[in-house]
Image (cartoon, rainbow, N blue to C red; front, side, top):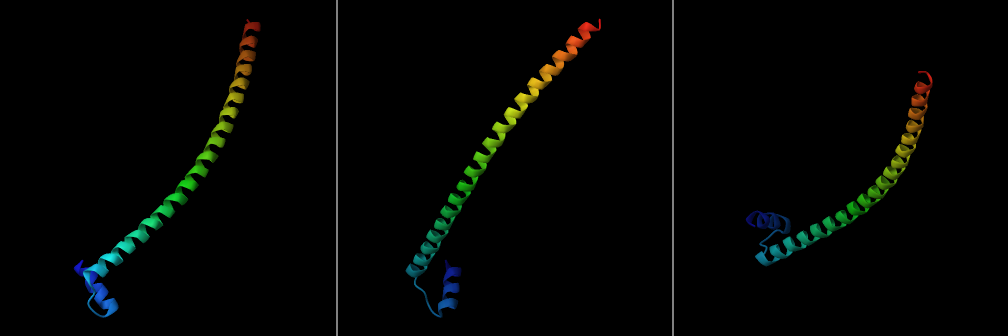
Length: 87
């Protein structure tokens, strides 16, 4: 607190009471907390948007994988059928 008092004395040109220093420190802390809250809200909004986009991509990817599996099943069936005929 002594360092803060020295800075305040240099800034305001005189003695600053402990109560005023406490009040200024509390105001600064409240301001910092409010800023942090705003940043968390912004981050959450961004995270939720990213999560929704990821869900859509995963859903589309799952559909694509299912189509590939069906195609591979058909190819495997054709190859197996061709081997049986060639025996």
